[in-house]
Length: 495
Ligand SMILES: *Cc1c(COP(=O)(O)O)cnc(C)c1O
Image (cartoon, rainbow, N blue to C red; front, side, top):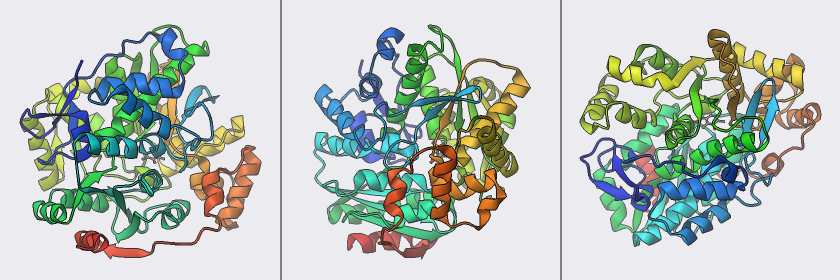
């Protein structure tokens, strides 16, 4: 069955997957969505006998129907290889009454690697299929993890350049060090004086600037996106939910067709949307538990039906979730609005003009697959400490937001279903916050001293990604104002 993609704001024009991946964002400013969600028709016995790569092919081939078998298998083989420090790619760790799906075993030790290690191959394959002659310029806004993972994926990939914008004071010390030490002739990192939403809006504005697009085209370039607005990010993320379910079944932890819950620490709503797509493919998922930090726009939205970004932007210890405009929510809104682009456009216009919108009661009713809650800074730190003390397992701040919200969910609902918690980053990426949560005595130690302490108390080796940056030289040090983003892009491209 062929799957085509259309814009959440467009007429009903459709494009094949490769064109949607290449464009990133639709010309009308909307996001590409599949015209239908394909069914997962492989039985669980077969799935549970498959490697990660095989599950990836099974799932992705249903969505990327204009890729040949060879093309897709080649992309998968290049992506999920020795860059990951475990053969299973996404292991499940049973701890504290839940299953932690560890999505941080790739080269930059956060879950962004799951999609960004394959996106460069999907994108260059898409360019070939569409006879795109221009050099592809990836523009990306990052709250810390996407930028590094995207650069690691695109570094020295022929026919591409990548420019990453991050909020100067909005990322962890290790995240910043990872980015500014990035090698590769085609990688550029720029910090902005603003927050993540400013960076993301700035990038979207550049994408939607027709004059700039024309200028670029004249100079032999075209933009694409590595943010989760690109459907090429979303599809690979569906894979690990299917893989996790198959692993649970293979390990005898669940019965055939047994429903599980999934908890996702959420920022841009990409990861949890992938879980929602997995559920819609037929994977037996019951509740999609959406965990927010103090920037709890989504919690309020699930409760009231009003999405309101007019509030203080709070810097937390889970910076990759410090987001007030969850871009991928638009894909869900479009769906709840009955795939009505005009209705969706009205909500998005209202978001742009007034910073908020309210969905209808009918749409709110449709949201019952989701449960939203949030964890404060204190609750997050306490959860890290408690789980470490009870079990010896050390989780990062983002995962801790999810674990804390799961506790609230259980208490509120008494739902005892088996539950998978998406563990989105290695504790080594947020060492300072993690260690200070465990014991105040760590506050006086240096960043890399803390890394060694973490290794001791968790009995885990220091990941390569951290070893690498201990001594790496800083290669990028440009900071600009938000308004200067288009100018710096032109400067980098020499136009
Ligand atoms: C990006 C990120 C998130 C949020 O994921 P979304 O897909 O944006 O909702 C959560 N945790 C970590 C560690 C991340 O890097």
